[in-house]
Amino acid sequence: MTLKRNLFFLLTITVFAIASLVVSIFNYNPYLASTSSLISFYASFLISLTGTGALFIYYLKIRASKNETVFLYFWPSIRQSFFLSLAVTVLLYLKSIKILDWLIGLSVVIVSVLLELFFESKKKVK
Image (cartoon, rainbow, N blue to C red; front, top):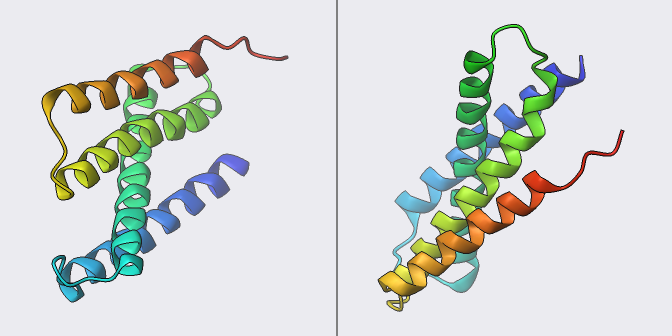
């Protein structure tokens, strides 16, 4: 029951974030937008990318494991998707303020991968 509830909440939040992203894209001029509208855009971009990525990663993990428990894959899928989405959002923000180059982009990606490896290597408390 909790897995169904968590999937429902994830899907609901993702749909609302995608709707907010579409509204932000069509209603705000990025050259004249205020700081709050840019924060709204980047937040909705991060949440919508995290939600769709988490659903996609969760689906791939379920398809790869045939008869294992599917409950164990939900929260790691969200975490992995969040780190990937955070890296993409930071790269997009750095590109928008025109300070992104290959060294900074590589650093952001490496930090994201190292964060995921840190959480993946933590011992599970039983």
